[in-house]
Image (cartoon, rainbow, N blue to C red; front, side, top):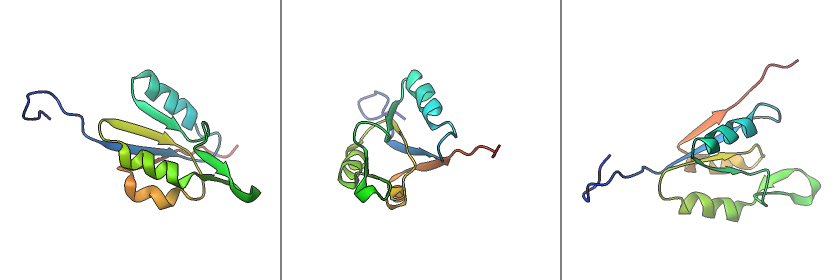
Length: 102
């Protein structure tokens, strides 16, 4: 798409890559980063927190800020936490990775 100044504009797109441990989320994100995409792995850098020892949750304020402030291009986010459904309306797509049981 070209904007009025003649330059190519980058549509805002946010994609969640999710799935249980061992399905390949980190591998997919690594390849996407290698191809030049912006990625966030919510397993690191304080995106998730173990609340009251009951399990990992996304830091909701931080995630809301990230999703709201992303303005241009494609952002890929990976994670699998119990409160991720709260954010589904903010994603353009949710990709669920699965693997056969052994």
